[in-house]
Image 1 (cartoon, each protein chain N blue to C red):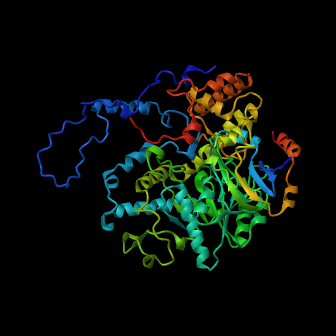
Image 2 (image 1 turned 90 degrees about the vertical axis):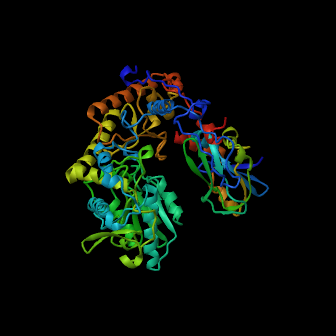
Length: 493
Length: 125
């Protein structure tokens, strides 16, 4: 049933923890004996072992290389979590970020010796201003949720500046899970707005909840069901009519980049995950970065520092007196995630405006192709077309005894990383697939074929086989419940 | 026999001596899967009907638990701190969440009895 080329059977490496490999007498580096020296620590010198494992250099190299071979990554196969986590990282960006003039910069260098870097930050911001159609971009937030908080702080500052402090933020059910947390972290009460039967924000329910206590609405567009919020203009008008602001979560900008300018949709504030849409590394590979695009009303409140050009040179404005307006203070040390800006700029400049437009088109086409191939055997939660991701629920598994989790574990046995599961919460047993623009049709076909075969196998009554999965992995099913209830966070001998 | 009522959000409330004992239903715990953490309200917290009262976290998701009626929290189930699995093993008894006063008993009329709730759940599947 599962073709061998999809399998993952040859390299089931076993590898203990590095602490368990401790070998008395082994050393990685041959250091000279410590010469006699007077004790200047006042008797505080450590005299027992510190518990680091003793290993030779080759053993350490093998340890980490073997661990890395247990990993599944976008560099080893299709990764249907998609841009939600990270897209393919073009190697051009890696190369450019390592140029000595960029890679060897120190954040405490005087502005006069970092003119090119400041120019680069502004050039990156300029692309983002053009793509969002919004007049200002605060570059320093460190990642998406930090961008959300920064954007909400700008909204709060703008409201308070006009003597209109407000109490709550509306968050639709179809929005990202971080949004309510960000609103709470910014001191707002959060009120949920239900979705309609099409999986989109219920416009009437939204307008019912609008009043002069609402600071803003946080919309994700396309939303977490992979659907475009078609009523976005009406929503923005209604929010603005009550004096509130529209925050848009930009995590799904991959579906819109180069095609739609959020500023034209009435959006006041939107963060952009450079590690999602703009293909920079994330997770183990690098820090996130969450610049925030701001409307003219919010721009005066953007956090410091601002990159400014005057008298023919670039400088970082660090104080309110240098920029006017009422900027927020710093939200992040130094200049933001500079190395990420280099890669994002490389991505945008190498693709160009037409290439970025093609990114969105291909991402949406890929998701719709999978939706069309899989729906019928699997059960799409909402009719298409979808945007950059397609959402299925577990109706196709009903009565089979196979759960979404079992299905995902069987995908692992077939050598494919599972999609997002059990999210969004608005559908039962969700399977959310985001192929991104960078997978070929051959890869999509192989993935679709696998999903269809697994769905048919579930229907054929092979629940026991699913419940056993995964069998071709170094570990079988982990006890997630016990890991959450009794976490062991520290290795002890 | 004590009156037990059910909400559309899958909370139950058992009326005992003018107070209500609140938890989530057995159906809710099967939908959530293994519960790993329960965040309970502070004693003396004033709850409005439908307002967020507790959070229940499972291996799949974190969900809010709402107050089925209005009132004030008088006690919480400390056992859930050490053993959140009680919500799975005994959702409608030992896995109770909190006790509360009932400020407006007529609010109970807006909730479902056991038969109506059973029908409601069947309609969801």
